[in-house]
Every structure is written in C-alpha cells, then in structure tokens.
Image (cartoon, rainbow, N blue to C red):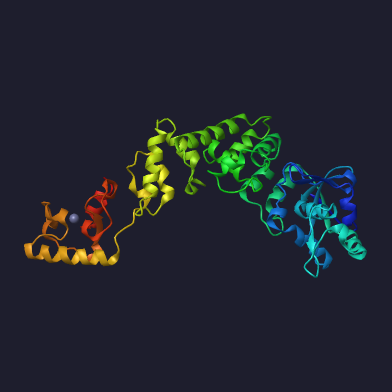
Length: 387
Ligand SMILES: [Zn+2]
C-alpha cells in the first residue's frame, strides 16, 4: 500500500460541491465531485446523534487538531473517504447550515451567522490527509484495524466494511435505514439503532445461526437479500403472533434461537397472554426476561424465572427446628435422607451442607414464606429441583 501525505487541502476545498442526503442521513460527495464521502463499506453517519458534530467545529475554531483523515485513491482524481467520513460530513453539514454551534455567550450560531473572520478561519483550515493506494484486500484489511476517532467501529460495522458489496448495500438499505417504517415494530424485539447496524446484526445472526461472517462472505456478491429478509420477517411475525402483548423485557432476547426451537409447536395466543400477565404479576419471579422461553417450553423450566429464594434468617430458623427434632428421633435432619435406606438415614447435615426448598412447589402456587420452607441436603435439593 502506497501513502502520500497531503497538508494543503482546506475545509473549503473539501466542501466544494458537498452533497448531503437528507433521506439517508449521509454526506455523499465533496472536493468538487472528486471525493466519495460515504462509499458502500462505510458505516452510517452517527456524529449527529452522538452529539459530536458541534465538537468538530468547535475544535477547528480553537485550532485543535481534528485528527488524520484517510482517502482511498480509486482512480485518477477519484477518492473515497476511508477514515474521516464523520468529521467531513459534520463540517459539510455545518457549512451548509444544517446545525448550529454555541458561541461564547451560549447562543446558537449557524455558519452564516458567524463573524466573517470566524467563517474564514473555518474555511481556510488545512486538513491532514493521507492518500492511500493499493490492492482492495490490503486497504480493507487495514481499514478493519483502524478505529474512527472517539467512537470505535462495532463488530457489525467492521463486518460491513470487510464484506462490502451488493449484498451489504441492499441489506443496509433495508435494515440500517432510519426511514424504514418497520423499525418501530422491530424495536419491540431488538435493542439498538438502525445507524449502529443493530437490526442488520440481528437479521444476520438469526439467518446464519450465529455465523455472521461466514454468511456475509458466502453471500457477498448476491444481488438480492431475499433469504435474509424472509427469515427475519418469519421470526418477527412468529414472535408477534405468539405473544400478542409487547413487554419491555422482550427487547434483545434471542428470538432467532427461540424461533428455531419452538416455531413448529402450536400455541394459543389468548392463553399465552393470560399466562404472561399472571407471571408478570408474580412477585417471586426475579427474571422476567425468562418468562417468554419458560412459556414457550411448556411452563416447566422454573430455572429460567429465577424464583426468589428464602432469606438467610428463614433458612437458619428452619434448620434449627428441623435439626432439633431429628436429633430427638435419631434420624437425619434432611427429611428425604431420613426416609431413605442408606448410610445417610441418620446423618445430621451442617447448615452449609443444605439448601432451602419449597415444600409446595412454586409452580404449583407454593409461597416463598417460612411455612413453606424445608431444608434438604444439597443432593436431594438438586434432585428435587430438576423434577
Ligand atoms: Zn438428603
């Protein structure tokens, strides 16, 4: 890879012919049309939502360096921004009057409202730019190793860069586009934002069963995203049909895995809804996120719910009562050992060798109160818990 350092390109040069696409939220061209600001492998413009674009302008006014910018030379007088897209878009958007900065008095000022010398200062600022030229694979490998100032690339953004091509372009149009009206629905089940590729990440994760990079590599040259889209929509439709109520705890669950495991079973959405409500009202359940898989699996695996356990005082008191009685009768203080036939039938276990158990199971309505507590040796407690 060949690199040339350029220190004579000014903000004004870069912003010559700057085009900002309002709909897609990205800077497209600059440098009189010679520069592609957002080539397909780049991530979306996120400085505006991260509140960082004003900081870029303030840095320039204070003469703070805004860091190195890298161009990929793709032809004679043709460049793509390899690193610096966020900063260049911020500068271009400011000069185009898209946002304001605060002046010394805390008043918002857009570019045209600034004093002439301040405008000149911004426009005449020289940027430090490396022009890189080399094999695509070289450039991409290197791109993967650099981090954009302040906000590192996340895994999905890196994968998009490494496997860029028609498939990623189409996938981003569907899953990374803030204007997509489905996003509100997806938000109920997936955590994150379109700009940071969280929906695309989920879609790829689900269809590939977790092998995202393998899948992206295999489909890199595809001219359609049919399978990706169909599978994603199947998962979303399935969840929203089975669980008719939208609960906060549904966001970010492993819906792809749950779909694979349970989508061939039939469910009655009305009964499911009633059960969700019942479990949400149960104060003994510590892990509400587990409610959905618990129900899908036939309401048997109570481990998923992390049902509240007995407190130490209750355990100690129950242990003392049980042990005193057992010593009198010369039997084990574990009631299950006591009725057994092996060497443990008269064994007195220490407190730390025992665990608390619900006499009446929680799933059958048993409460987490002293009355419903018994101490069992660890072996018997484990055996009972697995039933
Ligand atoms: Zn026992």
